[in-house]
Image (tube, rainbow, N blue to C red; front, top):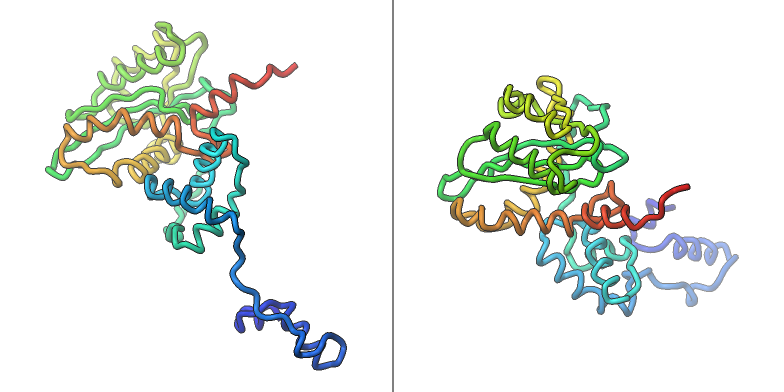
Amino acid sequence: MKAIAETLGVARSNLAERVKSVRGEGASSSARPGARGRYCKAADAEVLPQIRSIVDGRTTYGYRRVAAVLNRLRGEQSLPAINHKRVYRIMGQNGLLLTRHKGKHPTRPHEGKVITLHSNTRWASDGFEIPCWNKEVVRVTFVIDTCDREIISWEASTAGFSGESVRNVMVLAVEARFNAPAAPKPIEFLTDNGSAYTAKETVAFAPSLNLLPCFTPVRSPESNGMAESFVKTFKRDYVYVHDRPDAKTVLAQLDRWFNDYNEWHPHKGLRMKSPRQFIRAQRAAPCPV
């Protein structure tokens, strides 16, 4: 009966009533309910402009991330949170949902675990390129925590990837997290096998910061999946939706993009919190007995 109801565009209860009326078991045909219309709430008209403002500013966000940002803003105004299912319904009724992803999944699954349960246990690092419209290229090197997903440090230039840049972001990361010349405990430093990371100077320099160099297997980029995932997210949500006429323009915007990611970008693995929101929640949590 479900397939028939969906084909006719009516509720199953409607068909059940018709069957009963034919058999003389239920209400008469004059008392049959009409077809079910589109469900909505009167308060949706108040929420829709708030959703539109978020979607206009973050065109790559799906309904779950839109709901996370919306509830964060409503929390600042002491307003009740809104269920993400309601956000999905409102966005669907107003043509604001993203096109469903139909990409192919990799044929070789990766069963290793890059994510850690505590911050400052494992950091990952990688680099990526940002092409400009005038053919210039900006190259970015960064360090990310595999627990809280914060971009701890980064460096960008129009030069190539170098060991000096890697060593710079290593020092900046330690200073940002501990305000000290070295980490108080050993931290794994996960990278690929790029020459900037495997250089003798870089490998020898890491222990002085209490960082333990770890390299992914050859031809296995998914082993550094946290950094790879960030690159994809950063390009989709920031690089490709902003103007990139030249390297100078991109370099001027990078600091704002990284701060926005750290402060606002919701992560499913962080229960839809942003990296720094998750870090603040960790610090505020009582110490377990």
